[in-house]
Amino acid sequence: MDSLYQVKAPKFRSRKAFIAHAARVHEMKSSGPLFEGDKMRLAKFMTAERFSSQTFTDAVLTWRSNLLHDYLMQSAAVLNEHGGSINQLRETVFSHGINLQIYFMSWELQRVEIEELFPHKTYNPLVGPNIRDVGDYICLISIFSNIFYFSQMVKTILDHIDLGHLVISHYANVTQQFILRLAEDFLQLPRRNWEADVGNWAFDPLEKEPLFKAIWDHWADEDTANLEPMLIQLLNWHTYQASRENKDGGQDYYPYVEQIPLAYFFILRLRQWRGLSVPKISHVLTQPPFDSLPDEVEGRYEFCLFAKEFYAKTISLMPDFID
Image 1 (tube, rainbow, N blue to C red):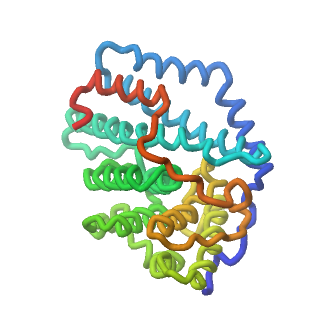
Image 2: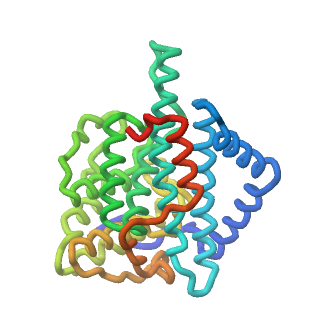
């Protein structure tokens, strides 16, 4: 199959360079003003007696920023430690899921407030959930949870997309649009009307990128002879997207997940859930400890204390939130 992604992209950060980058980011984030500001915004919400949209939004965004930082630091730690386990990322993934759902609510509250103040002005925020956020998270929850949590999050995310709870970017991420559609198809959900968003933010990823059309056609083959070369190209696609501007002028992967083979692991997990063999591909992204899928969560996951406390605080200040 002829593709631009036959070889590893130049300028993709080595593991050593990624670990050094994470250390620099951590040093900057843990410096006095930034660290103290984060603590203040979270404490202000957690101790509030009355609901304030601004305080709530500040806390949600601060928690999100801290979670993305955790991904970066945990990925670096796993790569830096001999025999490290990617299971170290699991707690952050589950906390991220709660944060993402609350993030959607924060976005909607801001939209309502702005439209009440400026009824003739379209709400078009610069900050909020976007396609890259939700597509990456669908991959993460498939890798680190089980099919129950995966299906619940896919349905939740698609519901929020239908409600328009997305920041519209000039660049629509082809990888994440492919992930969303394949997740929907795998779960045999009623197909949403993606075409209604064409021209706004959506497009058909199978038409835009031949590699994704080929994977769509062959990801569930019993014989992996056709699929394995595509998975190599999918990993090359990742390094290309994470290392420089792609041909569409944007990037499909944030730095905090650049070393995690998200789409590759996503395909492997779907095959595992379908009862199919799971191929093992050798690539710069699939060196230990990212050489195999982590074990699935058995039963119900016990969320970390802060995630439970933040959710409980949200419910106490906004009893209707759960609806």
